[in-house]
Length: 239
Image 1 (tube, rainbow, N blue to C red):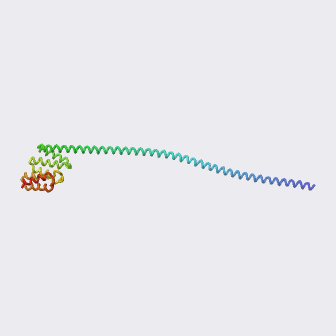
Image 2 (image 1 turned 180 degrees about the vertical axis):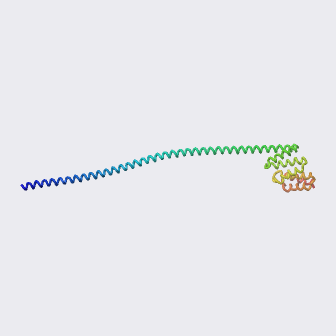
Image 3 (image 1 turned 135 degrees about the vertical axis):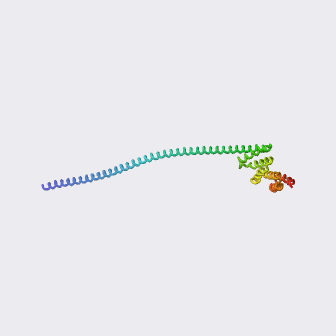
């Protein structure tokens, strides 16, 4: 009987020990599951955080794309405005250049017309002298010289004015006209003729010595001129 009781007690003890062992395993499994679940939650949180970062980055990229598009549009507008400004500036310079050329051309035409008018007035004055209308010629020649003091034809006007004064026997003014050529335009083609005119005036005034001096000056200074040969012959008559 005691043995039976001992066997029964041993059976119960064994069963209790087995039950206790099963509880420990179950608790360990629960703990493992809880740890796995925590790890999964951590991973999910990390994924969610990564997703949020990715979405944030995508949003930033979209914003940057929009900003770039806006900047590109602004650049295109600025480029268009710059092209328009450059075209307007080019058109302005072209118009200005055309205006300047037209003004210069008009000035040249006016200058040419004035020179032509001056030349015509000189020719008309010379014709008066050649026609024997010496008073009119003197007036016209004076007017030409006064209006055009820097004109290269002034020596020509002075010479013909000297001729007309000589014809009018106004030797004082004739000599002044001839002397203007000799003193101010010695290289002019009419300078030898002016010296000869001075000799004529001096001779007409009875100053043969002075006339001879002008003739000698002509021969010495302008030996190759046509008037030099005439002066040589004239020297014989004023001895």
